[in-house]
Length: 274
Image (tube, rainbow, N blue to C red):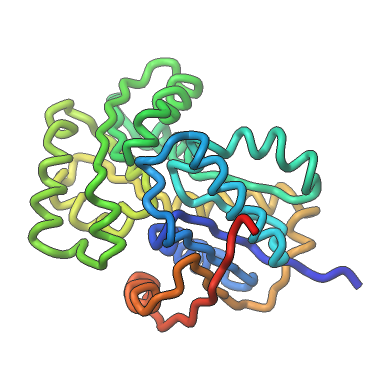
């Protein structure tokens, strides 16, 4: 009998835990494997070539653990590496597996909720540099005005569990000020780590701005995807479990990971690229 597989969630660090939590809420019956590349985070300051290689190694690890479908939760990886992996790596190595990203779901959601067509993108330096969000928004809308803001200090704050501090509030306010000045009505939190700052962002932007984190959007889109692709869904286990892997097995991963996940976790060590 064919071994039934898992859904993988890959991120550069802790950020994707926000995605995993929402996917679990939406689709609670499946078996999930989370991989955080904490030894090499952040990805946002890396070159495209390095991000591609790291992402490839993460996806390959999850496939070897039995994942049939992998969500690349990291926006930088989705922007820089995903398409190349989908077009070249999968057909040659895992033609029956699937890898999905977060960029297109967020873009579709932005276009569904914006009223004035002025969309802000809060992202890492790598995601901003890739221009992936402006390209996708232009492709799907043809008329949206897109304003990007890099926020490189936010990922380290979340990784250290310091995202609810006064320092985080001041840094966030500095990053959001240019976007407020652009009169946007929709703001994409285009980094999984920023989902952990959703309440602070909403407070700073005010009630007139739609703040769109990735978690709920990606979870809903995954549910729709599985309904459209029963051939993938039929290969997934309904054993209702979660396994955490990290490339840097430390007490910090247990402590911060548990805080972000909302429950104690027992992570395992992952070795990539071997």
